[in-house]
Amino acid sequence: MSVHNIQALILAAGKAKRFKTNTSKLLQKLCGQEMVLYITKALNELNIETAAIVGYQKEAVIDVIKQHHGESVTFITQEKQEGTGHAVLCSKHVWHKDLILILNGDMPLVTSKIIQQIYEKHRATNATITLAVAHDTDPSGAYGRIVQTGNKLAIVEAKEFTGDIEDHPFINAGIYLVQREFLETAITTLNRSTVSNEFYLTDIVKIASDADKIITPVIVPFDCVRGINNFKELWAAEQILRSELINHWMLEGVRFTLPHTNHLDNSVTIGNGSIIQSGVQLFGNTHIGNNCHIHSFSVLNNATLEDNVTVLPHTVIDNSIIKTDALVGPYAHIHNNTIIGEHATVGNFVETKKSTLGAHSKAKHLSYLGDASVGEQVNIGAGSITCNYDGKNKHATTIEDNVFIGSNNTLVAPITIHSGAYTAAGSVI
Image (cartoon, rainbow, N blue to C red; front, side, top):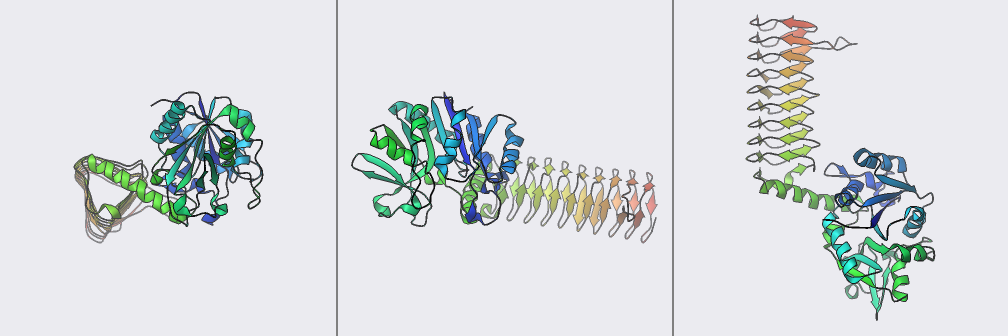
């Protein structure tokens, strides 16, 4: 896909009062990614030069975008919140392409394919303005309505619309492709709304229509242009995105036994032949190999599982690596850069923190391994723990290969247990 001579403006300055969180809605996450990044990534796929118009909590919004796009996005500050028209006017000094693409920042389901479609329609019709519209007759919606009277077209903001929705079933989706030459003049002639005291960008459509300019509506699916103004709408959009992710992995050979109960972040990868059971949540940069089996209600965050790993129910794995053919759970907690070796077992109510467990080693019941290096072919008896904290500092435990640790051992670090050693039940060492 390719587009030419376009400059994009993302409207990202609003306060999002309806979220009632005192944070910018553009920082709310869907499937692990901030809302605003879905727009920036879609534009990046098309190599469109992008500027973001920021205002409320601009430092946080800028920081998130820079983390993913470096210095490739330009930022313009809207000092006063005086509407979308005023926001676009604030960016006028950076316009230099023939076509200006304007998008609301709260539409995470917009794809590069839709933007490409709008661009191609704009070129084909030689339009002054091409805008995305969608069919939606929900009377509770917060979308402006497309109103046509004779051959004249206008957008009426939701709070000012008084007509019959059935007679005007199309909403303004919040994506506009505008000839810069027209926009430079039109944006300076907007009047304040008598209802909201704001300058509406949507008024440029009426200005163009009154001047008999070509206006091309492009009908797009409503689900692809859903705006998000509260947590209910965020939930609805995330449901759609999550379903798309699960569908993708199903087609790649992953079985979800009860998919509507699962959560996936969009950076998660899963190998073919793997099974994901009900209630499993996969967050962050979690990567699951081939033929793994993740049992119900387990939570994985930034976890790497090699092939043929089994995770039994109610297990939490965070920032850790589970190697081939290992078994963990149920009710295990593996975190803070733990590495579980090949064919190793971490069982019922075992916690590991910043530790390694070598190949074929076992800690099957009620144990804690903190700051521990455990070799191969080691048995950790039920109830045995490493005492890694003296009240001020953490200390390491080293257990070499072929060691047998009896039940209910207390290993007071710093300590080394050499190869082949055997400790009796109930020992404090």
